[in-house]
Each structure stands twice: as C-alpha cells, then as structure tokens.
Image: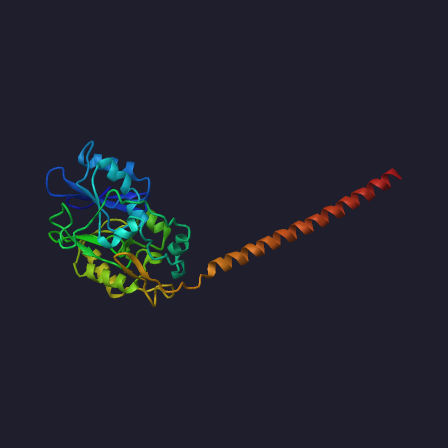
Length: 319
C-alpha cells in the first residue's frame, strides 16, 4: 500500500487497478473507494485489517464507476461487511444488469484497444446491495471533508473525489497516473499523467472537459484508478498540461460522434468503425493454413519419392 495523503491509502490490485481506503474523520470510520477486479476481496480485506485492525469494515463502499475492474469484488465485500455499495444514479442501469455500457472501441488504436477485444463484457449484478448517490449533496456519504465531482466521458456516472483542505484528488479513470498504453508502465507503476481507458471512452469531448474540470482544482496529491500516487507541484503542472493539450485519437467509433446516454442506459450509438484486425487476422490465418497445407503436400510427395527410391534400391539388392 502507498499513502496518497493523510488518512488516504492506495492499494494496487494485480499491479493494474487501484482501490482507496479513506478515513472518515471519526475513530475507526472509513470508506472504501472501488473494489478492483473480481476475486480481489481477500486482498482488500487483508489490507483493511492491516490498516484498521482485525474485522475492520467500512461505513460504505463507493464506486467511482461500474466498469468490471472497479466493481469486480463489490458484491462479495458488501455481503461480507454488510454495507451498501453506492454509485452515481447514472451508473445504476449498468451495475444492476438493466443495460450495457456503450460498446468498447478496439478501432481507436493502441495496446489497450487491442487487448480490450478479449475483456469480458458481463458485470456482476449489484441490485441487492447498491444504493444511489444523493446528487443534491456535494459531499460523499460519510466523507464530510470531501466533495464528489461528476466526470463523465469514460462512464456516464463516473465520479472523482476532492479534498479541498490539502488538495487531494482521487481521479477515477478520468485520466491515469501511468502511461495507460504501455503494459510495462502499468505493471511497473511508472509515473506519467496520461489519457485513461481509450477503448472505453464513449464521449471524447466529455473526457477532455472532465480532465479540465479536475485540473482546475489544482490538486497536489493525485491518485487515479490506474497508476501510482503522485504528489507535489509537478503533478499539478502535468495534469494542467494534459488538460490544455488533451490528445484525441486519430480514429475510432466515437471520435466524431459520441454515444448518448440517459438514466436508463444507452440512448444512441454511432455506427461502428471498420475494424480491420479480424480481416487481417483471417488473412494471416488463411496464409498459415495454405502454407501448412503446402508443407504437408510437399512433404507427402517427398515421402513418396523416398519410399519409391528405397523400394527400387531394395529390388536391386535382391536381384
């Protein structure tokens, strides 16, 4: 675990995604933000016991959004701890299996986009444990010294968390604190403020505006869904640079037209962009198949020639 700021600890799950233990201000009261990948509940419970003592449980679990790498262990932890899971109302259709997120966009390019083709799409159903965030209250439940910030574009109801007293930001997947397109950077936790979750971003204008909104807060302690803890003036400067020079992909389904969402789920989708990889993979596969068939054919002919030669030699010897 790493300490983001006073009373805030980051735990990296599988070296890929982060969860946060946030003290609520009263003795032994705390909140868990996000729950990592499916199967992470034992690791999270062990970290909670290390921080707060054996049998420790939070006041609530709050999800920044409902993508699988952030809500994967929510149902199991909520059942074990007997606490609610709280999400922004716009996330409710997805975490209760009433709707699916806008389809991922592997045509946006990059390593993560390629890998996204193989990510599961089904989510656990949190109907029995989930509650809607009160959007009339600027403070998250049990965290009176914090405020939540709506940062859509990556997920409709994605929220970040900001503590004004020391300019601490938990930025969800509005951006990342490591190069999200580099597998070694993600696994090694190499620090770099960058665009997050490109193949899952369904509205690039909102993504840029969300980063600008967070940069305007001038955070000095930054933690996100992916990447290491960053602190100091340089972190604030780098986030401002990303906001001012936010890079858009050269291609992709949602570049020129976003998906539109409402309280029920996805309301409109632009047509899919052409994904050339399956055709290229099919062409490569066909080439390998033909090469294999050719090798077998040539090999078979060679075997026949060797057998014929051997038979002739044997016949000559007998003669």
